[in-house]
Image 1 (spheres, helix red, strand yellow):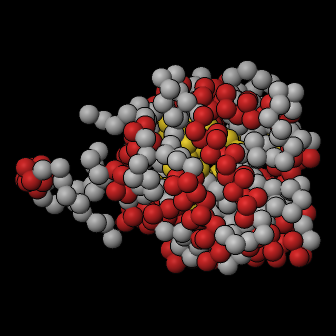
Image 2 (cartoon, rainbow, N blue to C red):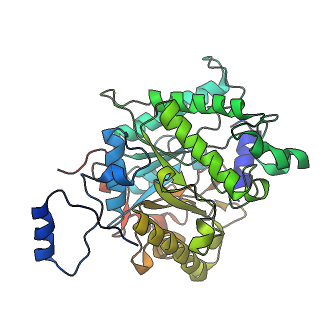
Image 3 (cartoon, rainbow, N blue to C red):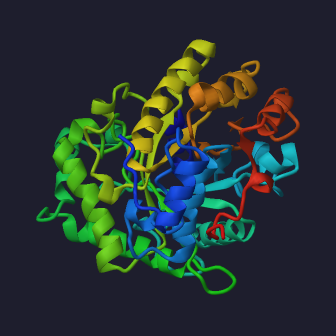
Length: 409
């Protein structure tokens, strides 16, 4: 569903490990106060122990810590392109703010147009203009206290015309992903694309000159095969190699230290073994995610229960690894041909995110457009359902977020 939607936009160019406490006294105090409860291994002193980047900026360290702690009480609600994709092209505030009075807690963006072959960095270039708009949106979100996340619908390396496997020849599908690996014929091409990504990371700054932390989720939905990096087109080891190279290059070669890295398959995995089959390792992943549209596609409570069981699986893995859990994409798109599902947000999605005491840090809806919406803007029939969802005890828009870029004292 979402992939078809993206295509339209493109075609129109548009085991809990206890750690040392900070002092023996603190440890004794904890035992005396509550001897039956396991202490949370994550502290403000040891955060980087569990992060990909031991040299992450202080704001990025704070984001990791606060996202992990947030999930105990709240789920941050976000949307892709919230500041520039509106239902019926009705601009102004985000559609979430039109509905609830508050902006989302998280903004989704994409490197797609930024790394496009047609972006020539000239002011009159449409792709460059999209890059500038994206950067402006990210800065605005950060200034509001929101969380920023980037996906990357990277065009295939041969002709750079599409990110969909369906648009490629059999030979291209069989060779494209392998070609960007170290030693591959398109490896230098891929490094050039990463150079552009790094330049964006390194120039995203807040009002005091500090680098803005970004959640980056490369090669998402890789368990499906609609993208050229999908499971049919690379082995698990090849996928891991590409992911690891991407992180190492950005962090070690380009000096990017304001990134958290998200591992984000689609919803096919139902066991920890399958989920981790292409996992690049704890040294390369901060956030364990899942994109899930299918379980919410008019399947009622049955689908919500399936989604919850998958999120619980991920959350359990994340608890052991001391990582963050997220529903990295979801939604049910309402169009003229698809009417809203009663209580989709307030009952089905909310139960998927909160049942069985799971700890999920954030959920992100896909973008609204002129002809369809994932989030009601305040003037449609399921407006109240979303507003009810957004005001439930575990739901958080930007007004309910703590200071995400400061470690608590």
